[in-house]
Amino acid sequence: MDKQDKLKNKLQQMQAQMIMLNEQVNVGGENQGGLYADLEEFSTLLEELSVAEEELRVQNEELENTRLAVEKERSRYLELFEFAPDGYLLSDKFGIILEVNQAMSLMLNTPAERLGGKPLALFIYSEDKKEFRNKLNNIGAVETIENWDLRLQPKKKEMIHSRVKITVKHKPTEKTFELFWMFHNVSDLVEITEMLRVSEANLKLLSNDLVSRIEDEKMKLSMDLHDHIGQALTCLKLSIRPNILMNKDYQEQKEILEIASQQIGEILDSVADLSLRLRPQLLDDLGLAKAISWRIKQVMKQTGSMIKENITLEIAKRFDTPVEITLYRIFEEALNNAVKHANANVITITLAEGDNAIKLTIADNGIGIDPSELEKESQHSGFTGMKERINMIGGTLQTTSKLGIGTTIQATAPII
Image (tube, rainbow, N blue to C red; front, side, top):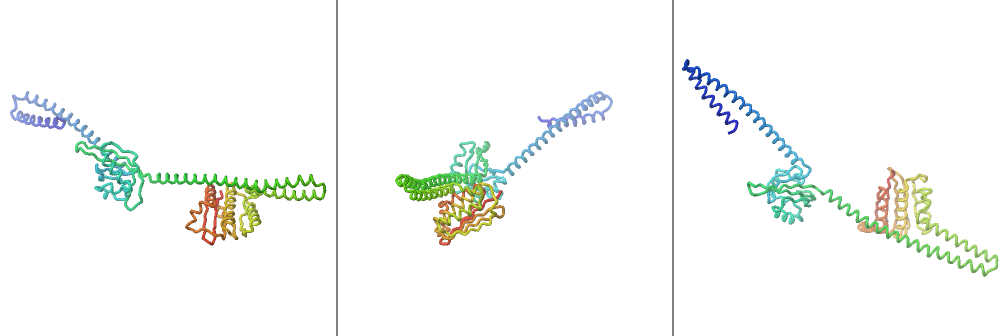
């Protein structure tokens, strides 16, 4: 019997006692002793009633506090469910959607009220639907599925990469279960991973290209040393010693020495040229503009090509060493391509400063490249190396070309 029933019984007893008291009052006299006893009992009942009322009040307060706490927790749960950053979804065991939160509605690009009653399979990427059905058919055998990579296909939006956790919620009274789904959008992570994979592949290609270029340069230097300097020194040795020893005529010895001196001068020129190819001292001493201007004159002298020089960059101005070296190497590579591969007879070099950047442009009137083949061709002829060089200093490289018209390369390096 609860407190409310006890209080009800007490009230019934008091009503009966009141009736008896009224009757005794009407009878009077001889029943006065019994009347006092009844009054005393009535007073006791009132005290018990007061205690019962207080207990009932406390009980009601506890019930109200419990109700408010439950409501607060429910409101908190609903708020967490509704405004969670991840997509939450409740479905039956067949994958029919029962409830979704706001994030899930946005993820599927469909209002929440329209998702109820729809199969979740409608929003699964076509290539993943077979795996989805297999998982769903076997879900009853496990309690939880975690870290399942599943692709979603929202309505009228691009496919989403998601990482899914499924929790089985059993309903013993109905002998069935529901599924609580959590979808975490990992599309950005997948995109970054793919970019990293592509970067690693490009880095591998660049490393292979770098090794190949180093070996090619070593081979060129070796051939130059052997074919030019080595042979010249050998000829010099063979021409000087026997002639001097065999020929006692002073005038003839003098002529031999003059020829030898001339050959030594040519050897020194070859050594100087090799040194400049490795690293131009002029770049370190006088700067980018002077080094480019000097190199243009050297190439014109060696090849006979017409190279137009348009350098507005301040001659004496110096920039960070990486910037100067990068632009100079791009200039060398592009100029070499124009002379040796593009068959150009007119080349224009422009070097200027503006908008906190240095712009180097090499334009030629050579054979050019078909625009549709430009990307494929860019993997050769040093384009990849030039692009990687400029990227390392935060710059950009633009290449435009037209078959039979020529090619233009523009490198832009920021001035920090």
